[in-house]
Image (cartoon, rainbow, N blue to C red; front, side, top):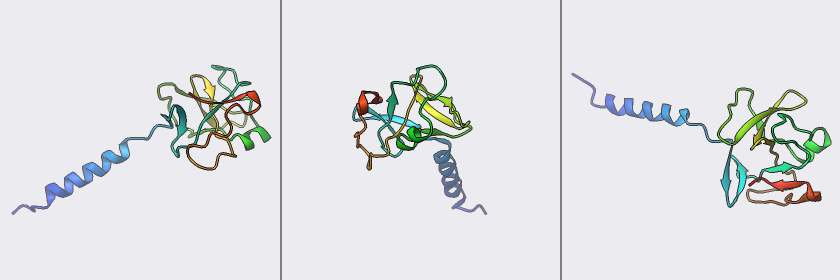
Length: 124
């Protein structure tokens, strides 16, 4: 005699496996600006050179403007690529420019760093 709950159990396991197979994008557009997985605004820095593969915001700069960290095994996703920081860690880049959050933004949707010193801009 077959177990009538076996097909349900199999579907449940399959659904669970599928839900873990999809990785949420590192960043997405929301309200006309690029945000990270937590909804925090992402910024570009005018001193970074698009396509250079590196960030010039290190030390105290990176404390105020935390890099959008990418895992060591992260893969490019459309306009999102990866640069290697001076310390060897990985950082997301958007259209070739490294992206950052701003430490003074406290909640999702804050964009208090836009046009900071005319060199920091919301990524769009």
